Amino acid sequence: MRASWRIGTRGRLLAITLLPVLALFVTLTWYNYQSRQSEVHAELAERGRLLATALVASSEISLVQGQFDELRATINGMLQTDSAVHRVSLLDASRKPLLDVEGRGDAQPEARYYEAAIHKRLLYITGGGNRNVGTMGYVQVRMSPTAMLSKARARFQLELAVALAGLLVCAGLAWRMTSGFADSLQASMQAVRAADAEKRRLLQRVTTAVEDERKAIALEIHDELNATLIAVRLEAQLIAALASGAAVMDGEGAGAPGGDTAAQIRDKAQAIVKLALGLYNSGRTLVRRLRPEMLDMLGLQGALEEMVRQVGSSHPSCRFSLHTEGDFTGLDGDAAISAYRIVQESLSNVVKHARAGTASVEVARRGHALHITVADDGIGFDPARTAAGVGLAGMRERVQALGGGFAMDCVSGTRIAITLPVEAWRAGT
Image (cartoon, rainbow, N blue to C red):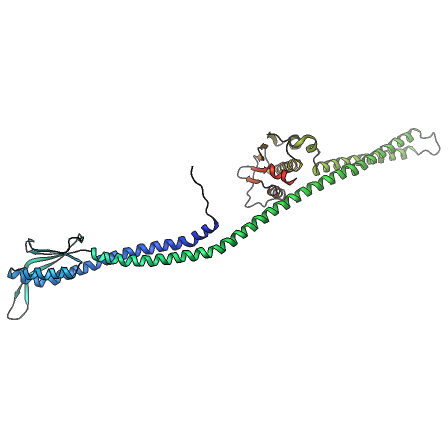
């Protein structure tokens, strides 16, 4: 099983602080090491050329006399005092070895060697000076970087130890400094989380209070206003009936109203009846919007079916469909009304803005979550250029208050996917 781990806030701060310093340290260390290697080889090259040139004079005398003991002793002394010299060779004009002196056997020689030619000179008595008339031989010097690299490595190790000590001091200071900063940052994050949780609780309370107020207003309209309108309608119908009876009895009584007057009374009464019916229907529509009675009568699934049917019949240019999955009987009132309002606002946006030919609503309860998807094949919109409306913002706030998830895709048509935890609704009741 692969282990999973997370880097804490303090670890991130240390990484942000120390990674650039560590990268700079590694870069400078590598550059310093390579520079010392180059300096050693450059110094060996310069010393090898100078040494080969310096041995030419002594080697010329030894070649002329044919005696190499004094030259061997000189070279041996040089090898004893300078550990950077690995081998000195003396060759004749045909490059045949005449003398070969090697230093310590543990040193590793360079692949290259440094050579100087021994010229035969003709001395002029008159006029002075001399002139090269040929080459008598060659002096070859092969250097070894072992000793110099060893010294350079020792200095480099000392410098590296000092730099590592400084790096550890910087790491300790960074650890010390990030400790207080990480604590304050954690406290700030906890405060933000607490504020967000409080905001969700407040939004949930506001949503619940709004729905309760709507329910109270709906009951008030239903019990008071609609009852009064019914009474007005009945009284108007009675007046119309009395006026009709008075018209029939016209001429039979002395004080009975005339036919024209009875007809006017009847017309006015019928007008009052129409107005009362209109107000009554408006009141019922308002009651349904404030508190859908279908939700209490049929439950969430039946109320959604009725809503989709009514919207489809009112807007035949768009074909609406509903698909439900799962058991909705366990949802409480707040859960049901929240899902109902979300679907209601989504379908209202489809009707007003989408110009769609088809629209689908899917509501599924899986475990402790309710999944709502509303999609259409309309024109869509660009959220970056189009400001979100009040309805869409209200849906977001309602979902956020319940601790759910909200996702929207507007590239091809519009698709809104909402996930609401059922546990949050139950806990809030």
